[in-house]
Length: 545
Image 1 (cartoon, rainbow, N blue to C red):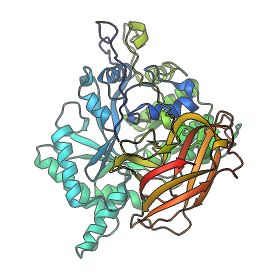
Image 2 (cartoon, rainbow, N blue to C red; image 1 turned 90 degrees about the vertical axis):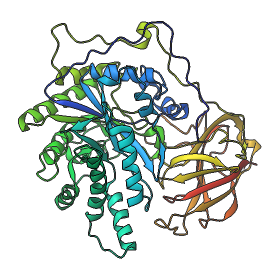
Image 3 (cartoon, rainbow, N blue to C red; image 1 turned 180 degrees about the vertical axis):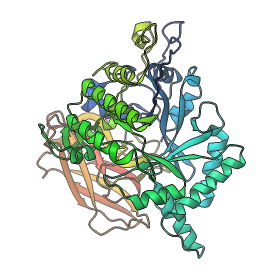
Image 4 (cartoon, one colour; image 1 turned 90 degrees about the horizontal axis):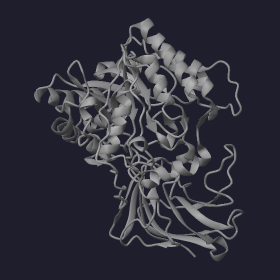
């Protein structure tokens, strides 16, 4: 599904953004970048929950080359020399590639390097020799030979989010051909295929980096990853591990899913010691930028509260000292701008440039003329770059005859949505989160007694139903909103009924007039059609009745 929203015209003056003035230091600083705001509905979830963190670029159009020029300028003027960008490919289907396309149109792109973090958290069976060949050819033809692509020892760097998925599917492919591969051998086959193609294209091969998951070190697994071709690891974020590694767990909401950023500092120091000097697969030391995924999860959020620029500065100083003591020359910010997950340091209303300044002051050498001035679009009369406000449609029924009619994906529950032949089609990606959402002009709950839907759900062969699956409806009002300020309570409406997952069309009626919270003016609706991962969902129509 493509957005029909268009960003506002960015130019107010004839002068452009001042040329970047990069600053550097002895330790190379890279940053994980999530290109997840392809339209205003993504920002809307942040605006509802964390409005005080609004970026200084506004609720911005992430594919706008001028926006990207600001991001490049601010990054390199605070010591960040490369972005590791989330990149999506599922059997040739790409999404969230708007930032990369905009980057290659940006005036200042020669100041910043970028590289792929292949977010291959896809359903079982999508990786294959044929697909890996097509994927690698795309990389070679479009990215690897461009001067902006980041390399180590001349090798284009590729970070892989789920190495186990590659291993699983290549082992399964070999089994279909009568061959038996051991754990790690499928992954090795996939990586060698891509590496061989890149060398045949005239490059010295690929520098592979693995994304580490979990909280425990499995040395045998690390040996398999290194044997398969990985040269290092990095963490995408640092969440619950901080709680478990910190010895002193004092704080207002202390528990593994809600704790203070003060626990992150001692936790991350222990994590660097455990992972960055690993003899088999050393991790890049990472700077954790916090976490609060309430915009996507509401009632199941993981929240790291009380983050401050001073604590972040202390973590930066700790990291610098650790790197100097161990001869490490490269670190990663994890991540830079995961606004929907509350992991960000990009300049914003909450702290201005303070997070960026802390990074720069610790890791960079101050020029004789002083640090580059922190300027914003407002300072020079440029912008705004905001998307138009998300439209709240006056609807209580939807037939999907022409478009999604105001329903958008929840990134935690759905990879993408599209309308096909008068039905809304999407793919479930997480089993315990709502899949789609809409905001509507308020209507009186008393006028409606039920919610009806015609739908079919087709399971993936890797995730068969148990017979206990349910369809769940969530709703919010001004009095009982979807998102609440009380982090430990849930006040919005919710109800469920059993659902069939058999690839056939069924109609369901969800009673509402007997639900405790079915009252007031309904202004937002979220839907989880089935709590089953990797299921295909088709919806013909939905309506309040």
